[in-house]
Amino acid sequence: GQQLNQSPQSMFIQEGEDVSMNCTSSSIFNTWLWYKQDPGEGPVLLIALYKAGELTSNGRLTAQFGITRKDSFLNISASIPSDVGIYFCAGETSGSRLTFGEGTQLTVNP
Amino acid sequence: DVKVTQSSRYLVKRTGEKVFLECVQDMDHENMFWYRQDPGLGLRLIYFSYDVKMKEKGDIPEGYSVSREKKERFSLILESASTNQTSMYLCASSPTIRTDTQYFGPGTRLTVL
Image 1 (spheres, rainbow over the protein chains, first blue to last red):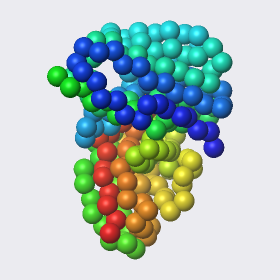
Image 2: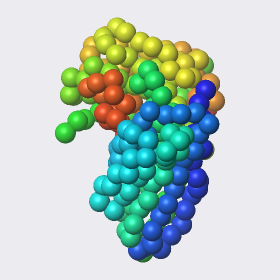
Image 3: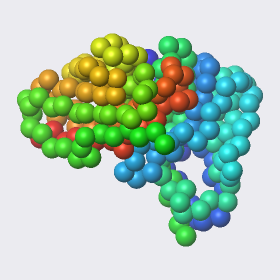
């Protein structure tokens, strides 16, 4: 099946720092989604991307759909302690199925 | 607010037991999904359902079955639990087949001894 490689696997940063994570694949995707999972909760959708090259922001979060349609990145600016959690990328090809990345565990030190 | 609830947050079972994981959504969504989440592997789709009594296999259906007798309820069944089924199980529901409209439940952490 398709695979998404998400990096980094974990990040330890200081409050106020910017964060960047990305996902790459050998397959082309029609849609890229970014989720955040708080401890003890299910993932919540942060940003959805639908077109190659698209750049979308949601508050301090910015995500881009790669031109090749095989990659995407998520940036978080000026991190705060409540940004702690696991961030997942997910790509959709066809049949309305999602392929998820391995996740990036983010720790923010106050 | 969409609410997806899962019957247990934590469950401990023994090898060979039959296990039922229940998921209920209160928003009249047509589509429901079961995923398992493992460290380093992300979320993987086990089964999904687009309508009552309808089910389709996801990417890792082996060792699992599902039941959807009512629109609001989607059950995941482990016929004979094995230790490699120890995992976090997440249910999701969606009003459409679009992937950007899935709402997840809080998860059930299942341990099989």
